[in-house]
Each structure stands twice: as structure tokens, then as C-alpha cells.
Length: 405
Image 1 (cartoon, helix red, strand yellow):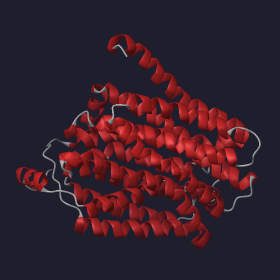
Image 2 (cartoon, one colour):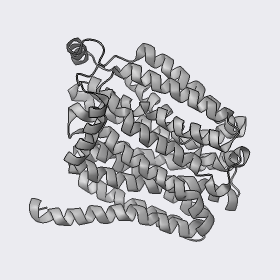
Image 3 (cartoon, rainbow, N blue to C red):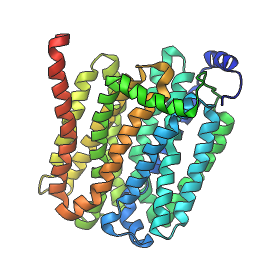
């Protein structure tokens, strides 16, 4: 059910604007919340033996978190088009704090994996904050505001791995989860006080709301195409970042601190976000997409090259992160433009596809690495974004006679 007066709320939203401080706070929140999905990625080799999980199944920790996130995107994020947004964000963030705390206290594989799933499920608050900012921002600055907040989200994804590796050196892997739980509690408290209210005008039952998500996916071909491209890229992204720390520690003698530095270098790829925005604003989204879809498989083939120690892995980390972030922002801009009144549900479809891809990639990562080793695994992973590239090119060739381009 809706709460409050929709007409009055709509009026207050039309006159409100987001301050620079609020935009910075939302960007930080998005980065901090989405980081919950990735803290475990570089430290699964430390977590698994202590909770009784085999090395071959260690990547379940990451994949279940991402599956939980995909489930939350599908079942919880659409509620932002129905329920008051601030209360929804605060509730989910508090639930994420409890889930992180329980994961840090777990001693059995079954309990830890259950809480990993719940961490992903409750961390979807980030995907409510981005459309909320789009609603609250004035029309003339909406693109800039959403771009700035997305930069925070992308940095959260990229910096979560080095932060986790550094924290585990100082406090152990349980300390990583306890620290994240405390941060979520603080964010929930500040959000409850500082975040503007927004009560959507949309009225429907929950069943009808979820049904409309599938209807939007059926209606918009652009949404399906963008979801497929980014889902395949994110699968390769998750595969790489799950097995690269294992390769570096096992065969290159890296410590957790050195893995953190490696991940920090990979975060250079975050510069793709503003570049993507400029390309899209200038009408070059198709060229930008082609660059991203070419760069992803090429970077993974570079990582498979023999010799030069870990140099090729560093090159791959930077190029792959750049490609994934470039395509994500380009896709999100196109998806948001389809229907301004359904942004939360459009975002749910787009991001669900992405994290299903990521979860599937993480699920097979450990087994792939244990069976094939690094070089062959990297070549096999390259086939995943290559499929996105082939699909994109085939659609462009089919469209050429129609649009004359």
C-alpha cells in the first residue's frame, strides 16, 4: 500500500533539488553498499578452509552472494515504484548489516552460504538509490547527477577487493565482514535522517508490479539486448576477478597486501564511466559499445599470454574493468531513457541480467581454474564476451539496410 499524499509528494519533489553534498553522500552509499558483493572475492581461499568448504567449491561464496543480489533486483527493487523509497532503503541497509554480522560469526559452510545469499539479497538498496536520484534531480542536471552517483557505485565495485585484502591482513577475514556490518548500520542511520522522502504515484498490487517487470522486458528490445551484452561481460569480469587472486597467490607468491595493490591498479578502469557518458551524449553509443565488446575478449587473451610473470594479468585487469564499466554506463543510459516512470523496474531487469551473468561466472570459476589452470582458463573465459561481440555485430549487419548506416 502507498503511504502519504501522492499529489503533495509529487509537488515537493518538483521543487526539491539535490545538493552537491547529498549527491556525494549518495555516491558514497552506492559504492559502500555494492562493495558488500565483492569483499569475499579475493579472500575465498582464506574463508573456505576455516568454514569447511573445499577449494573447488570456494567460489560458491561469491556466486551465491551474486545470485542473492539478482533475486533482490527482481523481487525487491521494483518496490521502489510502489513504496516510499527512504524507508525501503533504510530497511534493506539494516538487513544487510545483520546479514554481514551473521556471516562473520558463522563457522559452518551451510550457515555461511545462507548468509552470503542474504548479503546479496539485502544489498539491492543501491539499485533503489540510483533511480531515486534520477527522480529527485532537476531535468537540466539529471544526467550529471546520475553519472556522479554511478561513478561512486563503480568505484565501490573496483575498490572493494583491495579494501578487503588490506582489512584481512589487519583483522582477519571475519573482521572484513564485521567492518562492513558496522558501515551499513551507520549508512542506515544517516540515510534515515538525511535522505529526502519519495512516495511513488504508481498504484498496483505486488503481483501486478512484478508482472509488469516481465512485460517491460518483453516490450523493449533495447532492454533485452543491453541486458544480454552486459550479462556476458559481467560473467567474464566475475570469472577473472575470482581466479586472478588465486593465481597470483599460488603461482606468483603474492600476499593479500600485494593482491590489494593489484586490484587497486585494476580500478583505473573506473575512468570509463565519464568517458561513456561523453560518448553517449555525443551520439556515439554504438561505437563505444563496439570498443567495449572488442576490448573485453582481447584483454583476456592478453592475460593468457605466457611469460612476463604477472604483467599480462595487470594489463588484463585494467582493460577488462574499463570495458565492463564503459558498456555498463552506455547500456544504463539507453535503458533509463525508455520509460522515465518505470526506471526502477527497467533497472531491475537490466541489473538482474548482469548479476545472473556474474553469479554464473563466479559459480564455475574455481572448478574451471582447478581443472585447466590459468592460461587455458583465460582463453575459455574470453569466449564469453566474444559471444556478446558476435551478437552485437550480427544485429548491426541486420539493421544496416534498414537505417542506412
